[in-house]
Each structure stands twice: as structure tokens, then as C-alpha cells.
Length: 436
Image (cartoon, rainbow, N blue to C red; front, top):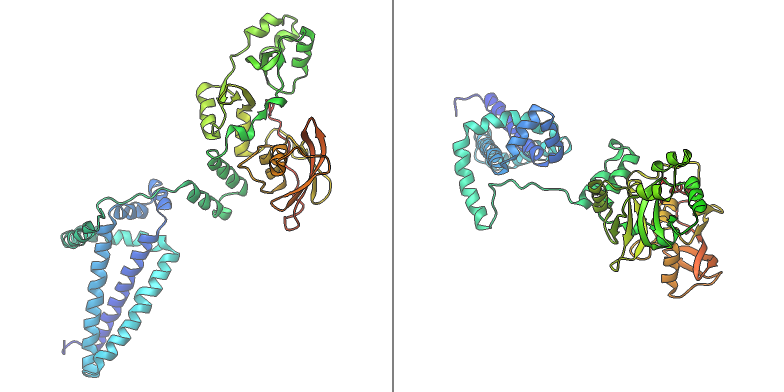
């Protein structure tokens, strides 16, 4: 070493420090890279992404290779710095070299390259993958020995490094990813994705038309009444029953009867011939499950029944789709038929309006884990039948009973709390062309 020029030793030391920084930065870049983005890029044919993905299939081997190289250059750099210090200062220079080298490696070989790799992992990981793949082939015997000893220690701790664990995102984690996507995903698309994630938590009870609002054909009515009802119906499908909704016999698609009706050959026999059997849905069924059931059975309308078989309401395919994409069959300029804006913070709301519709229209968060309608919420909160003028507060929002009908809240006034954002316009009405 005494014959080697000091300048050459300094140059070699600088090279070793640079190599140490490359090993440290590439380790951070490969370990922190977004695995889902990496998988997407690899499937798209990106060569660097493919190599990086192949390396990450066995992270124990990759880490063994990187640390083997990093420790080798660090130890060699330490030895080289000691030689330089001895030649320049003498034995006293050993301590000086150790301190300076520690500071230099910490800044230029650890903190700076690792920070850069953490900020831009792909820029570091992909080029590094081109080097590590052939390097791993050459040094595989040595890496295998190191991994064998290290994996033996891990197995004592009941850890199996042979299988790279694939971490799948939970529903809530995926929700966070969508929320934090920012400008990468348009806001409307974010809402649609989040709505899809909510389909498991929302049931048909939350969106169904209550039984007292179901419009259908009573076969016991006179024929003129039935014809008038079909002619003037705003819906594309109508349930058919005898006397009461409990005596359901099926439903009819109006497009199958309009032509015979225009041609004057429509009668009760023709009505029964085009009628389909009723389709029943158990209450509490999640929207995700019911969407698949509608698809499987090729149905668009179902009657929600309780455990005793009593009809509780009606749900349509369009109702479920609107939970995902929003209301799409009504002009945006129209107001919600059950919600009328009185002033900046005051709204008159029908008692039959669902809590979900009210929350969506007013941008508030009334509880969803109890009654489904405003009337039910008021009654549950008061634990008695309210009277006109009764006032209560729910999550800071004031509610006043304005009108009663047959022991039910017909209309109530909702006053939004002061800290709630103002100027929120009601959502558009739900008119799906079915029974919604």
C-alpha cells in the first residue's frame, strides 16, 4: 500500500462511497416501491418493472445481495481510510479517519440516497434491477450461503421467508387509496368507486320503496280503472295483486301491453298472459348480493319480504345502480320532491324521505344504523308519537315537526347546524322509471 499514490487511494475511497450510496438507495427504492403500480407496469411490458418484480418475488435473496455488496464496500472503504490516515497523520489519524468516514457515509451513502429513493423509488429501483439480476446470478452461491444462515435464524422465530407475502388491500385501505388519489381520478369517479365499496354495507332495506308507497294494479278494480292506471303510469313495471299488496300475483312490463292497448285488443286475459311471476328478496340483503342476484335471474324488480313473508317494500335494479353512479334519470335543475329549501339553512322534508336521501341531498350525516326514514328517526329519538311543533336535535341539526298524518310525521323542518357548510343544494329527485 505504501507504493500506491495517495491520489489514487482517495479516488478509490470516493468510488467506494458512491457504490455504498447506490447500494443503500437501491435497497430503499426496491423495498418502498408501490407494488400495485409495479405489477401494473410489469403487465404493461416495462422491462425495468419486470426485472424489479422478479427480484421482489424473493426479497430475502435481494436483501442478502444488497447487504453483501454494501457491507463489502463499507468495510473496504473503512480499511482504505485507515491506510490513508496512517500515511498522512500516523496512528493518531485512525480516530480522525473513523469519525470523518462515519460522517461522510452517513450523509452521502445513507441519508441522502435513501431519502432520494424514498421520494422517487421507480427512478432508482428500475435501473438498479438491471444490475442486480445478473449480479444475483454471479453471486448466487455466496448469497445462498448467507440466506441459508439468516433464514435458519428466521425459522427459529417461525417466519417463512421462502414465500413472499402478497399483501391485499382491505376495503377500508382501498377506500383510503381512492380518497387520496387526488387529481389522478376525477371526483365523480372517486364517488362511484367509493359507492361500489359501500354496496356490501348497504342493504335493500335502505333504498327500497316502502310498501305504503308501492303503486300497482289491483285486479279487483273495474277494467276502466286498470286501463287508466296503465295509460297514466310513470313507471315501466307495475306489480299486480288482488285487493292488497300482500296478495301479490306478479308484475307486468308496460311495454308489453301498450301496443295491444293501442290496437284495442287488450283485456284481462291478455294482461295475465304477459304477467311475470313475482320475485321476492329477503330483507337485509346487501346491495352487492342483490345486484348479482338480479343479474343471475335476469330480473329488474323485486319485492322485499321479512322473515314472516310479509312484503315490506320494493327494490329495483335502477335503485342499486343509482347508489353507484348517482341519480341519472332526472334533470339536474329539478329539486328533490321530498326536500324543499326554505332558506339558507332550513329545509322542509317529507317524513317518508329516507335518511340516506336526506344525507346525500343536504350533505349531512344523520345516523343510518337505525330507522330508514325521517319519520322513524324522529319517533325513535322521542320514544313517543310526536305532535305538531315538537322540536329535537339530532347530531347538532334541529328538527321541528310541521305536519302530522295518521300518527306519522308528514312534514318536518330541518335546520342545519351553524358550522355546516352552507349553500348545499338538494340533490335531484329519484325517478328511475321503475318504482323509485
